[in-house]
Length: 274
Image (cartoon, rainbow, N blue to C red; front, top):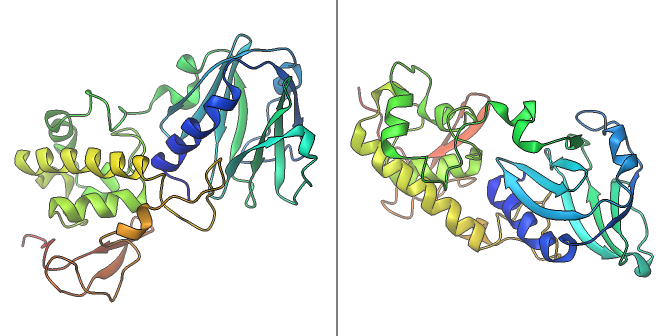
């Protein structure tokens, strides 16, 4: 599933091709995604793309006629094509955004769990209203995380994956961050010490920053807009490594389902206090 670094990579990949361009048309081949594709997209012909940015895992196309919220869902990807290439339409190519200079943004989504929605102003969109701070922002601090964790009995892994607490820390990066912080994923959030919060915030920012720089994690369902895969998966410490030796201590990496998600951790580096 594309996570924050993959979405940020998509934003950075498509922006140079689309910002400043005029939308010629938006072609919708599959209207039923996670939610119905907004009918307002049919009225975007002639709109100018002013900017493209990310909020949580939403890619937002800001125009002079409102904003388009794009979510990659479980398996979505975006690619930049040239209309002149007359590229064959694939089975899962559900939406094309075509600009007047012949550039085409193509949305592919095998599981159809993404979204293409129009809103008047993304800043006031109901879908984004209750989101927590961005993990790379100055708002996401150790003090903030510590205060939010008080009286929370939920496992810390579920806690940091809660978008109302902080956005964009998906399963892969939650596992990696907790390992680097030396925190067991099942530790109750309310038992986090302030020092642990300091360490956890630092490593979350570090892990996500490195993942963005390296282009996002290579997963079978994700391809960058330029067709190149991300490379962060090559340096994962625990995620997907059940049964392998920990790179730090040599113990065997274990896996456990926490909050309906597979969680990977080192039993020696991440001990659970009794």
